[in-house]
Image (cartoon, rainbow, N blue to C red; front, side):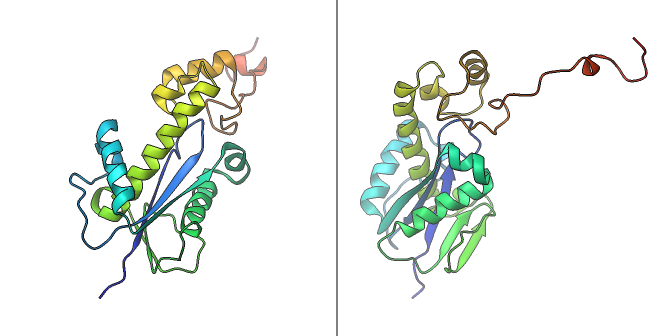
Length: 201
């Protein structure tokens, strides 16, 4: 009988604020999760319902985080891998194998398979996608109360026009990723930048 795989996915990799959150989930061979799919295809209400059911039915699950200061030091690619690794290490016992959404592997001596758009096609990755998204969204609601004015409860840290305007007006908060475009201070234009090449002043 084939061993059960642990599915892994992340949420928040492209955000300007907040952590990147990874989830790992091991589902039993038989489960009752109607409508299980990529978290982005579901409404917030449906994600909440499924997340509650996943937590109850899963044989094991765990979350891993990487916060903005780490993201700034190691870059978002490596920070995402770190969050995934922490999620797997948080399980009571190591899984027999991993199936991971996208193309990134985890630095662990466990057999692994990456699946592009796996959150849409592989149920155990879909479950991880939902947990990562739901728990991160809940966290961003709490961070909105701590860092008001940025609209974190609405956009969850993504680079919307409203979010970019708030950062420009208020400056970045402690949970913003200072190395990301839209948050980092761009160098000011010099006098030379204001002249077209080949045109004398």
